[in-house]
Image (cartoon, rainbow, N blue to C red; front, side, top):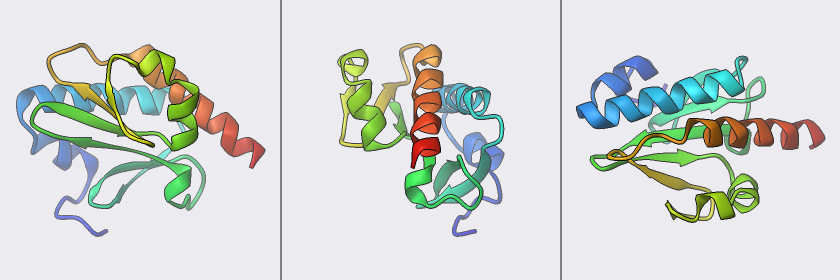
Length: 122
């Protein structure tokens, strides 16, 4: 594993309290939507492989920062949910959930399920 952390629990524990809380919630949502996801590290951040031995585009990733949690579902997911993500800072394949706001759990679950559906069609 290419990380200074041996597992995702260690990664989350190393974060500031608000970031720790938000990361834990995002992780719960990912695993609720994709109970078979395998927790790994990619780019030294927590990743969830949605298919066995999934490559980068078959993973959903998250990362903790001082003021937000980065969520990296995939550009196709970001495009599909663009209207629902209008209140968040976004990139092509990522969104930032501020630590001072509730984590949008239902939205995250729907985003992960959507990505799973797309992967089934590939």
